Image (cartoon, rainbow over all chains, first blue to last red; front, top):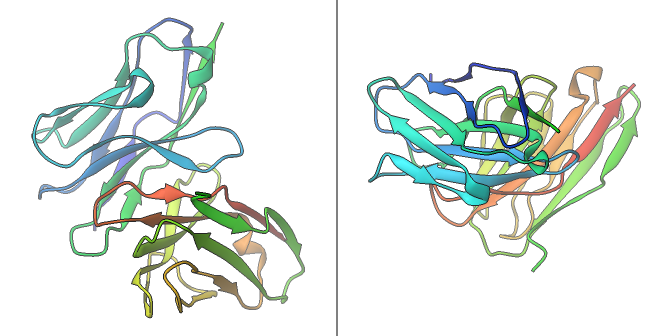
Length: 114
Length: 112
């Protein structure tokens, strides 16, 4: 079965520093990959997605992610974080088939300090 | 355009009680999903639907039931609530396969 591992449960970082949130998935077959963000007491919203094409994907709020098929990774990066980026970040992979079901990682809490 | 709405926002149930969590979307999406979120565990899929009249089980369906009589509504029914069902429940919808899932604000349920 498909699985997603987010390697860090918490990532503390100072404002304006770069950050990388790591995500690995288990499947070796073609997958679609997503990063979602959850601000406190809110639902999830899409940051970016990889379906095909260029392995470097740009999303909202200055985030980007790189799809690496050989390492089955989809790490999220931002060159300079803001206090407002403090949130929970979820990596997700679509399960092959025709249902659109997503398998989520455990989440990474990004804590941006002033 | 309200997107995905969920009611109630909060609820406390006693063990053995039943309730229905409501989910409505106004985007005419065919695909709808119910997830539960437990601390440190990410989101787990409970049930999903690929269109009106079609539902299927996800990863953690035990103790829940769903129906999808219209495109807009996808209620989740809890029968005989148990403390293990204490969680935050999210409903989501998607226009097409592998497209963005739009999430509602969630329902925080406590079973005591």
